[in-house]
Image (cartoon, rainbow, N blue to C red):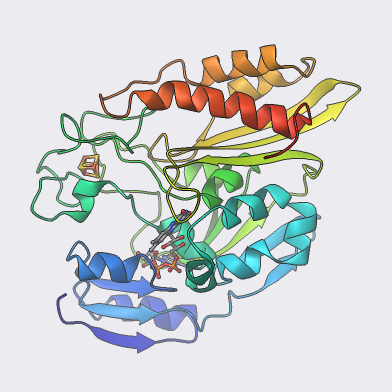
Length: 331
Ligand SMILES: Cc1cc2nc3c(=O)[nH]c(=O)nc-3n(C[C@H](O)[C@H](O)[C@H](O)COP(=O)(O)OP(=O)(O)OC[C@H]3O[C@@H](n4cnc5c(N)ncnc54)[C@H](O)[C@@H]3O)c2cc1C
Ligand code: SF4
């Protein structure tokens, strides 16, 4: 690990001002991802700005009937918050499927959005990796790629975004609120994370020095028919091979509205409005769920070790929708 200085700040302006004083400064929140990356020499900040004392640490009702999650609220406090459990149970389920209780006690909501890929080569500084070192090549294409992406990949990178929480936030149509050098702005969740294209070093659309302040959940009612299904190598403490956030509004056996997002398959949570629209208006049943699964995976591409994910994702979608619809009991 390289040497670095450390400061705690108590307001966003002070945090942003610190950025200009150093060559490679970095914000730190729970530290559960950043410190690991620093120990592996993947991240080499010369200055850490502790943002955990900023006032983005509450969960509050929004005037439009939605809920605002502070970026510095821990994943544990978010998942167990009474309003989140009652109004956004899909989100609670997704957060609790991630990491371990100890990690969720430290990890923050902002940090969860910003966590970096778990691609083995990204962590191994002895190997080429376009995300870690732009232009050096991608060791995963043609290498061992079991956990990597099958949708939205590029010839430069096939990494996945590892978050569980973000898959539910994508399905729920969250909004990310930011403050930065140029003031405040909001980004729809679908536009927050990027596909790799020819700039795989960029995970998201934040500008240098931007701080995530909160995440807004719209006032939707997906409290009856929902399921976060995570398929992984171990029953706990493992990242998703494939995950599915499914939510439905159903009346008299007919789907009025559907939400469907996938994790573990792309550089960002993968949501298809087209497939959601296809589900809306259909009678609830496995046949239409299978059609949705086939449609969402239509452009999927395997790279050898990870090709099994295409069929796995289809089966996971059918199972998640089936359980969300109440056709089978939730596992
Ligand atoms: C062993 C292990 C298993 C895990 N398993 C899972 C899992 O199954 N599912 C899952 O979803 N996650 C998993 N995680 C990841 C964990 O959820 C993340 O490490 C955590 O959410 C990151 O939050 P943090 O507050 O600790 O971020 P930090 O490590 O402090 O920061 C991470 C990055 O975000 C930036 N950052 C933090 N907050 C902000 C902000 N408000 N604005 C702008 N930038 C910010 C930092 O500069 C840094 O670059 C696991 C982690 C570990 C170590
Ligand atoms: S998939 Fe992306 S993160 Fe992994 S080695 Fe290739 S460029 Fe690096």
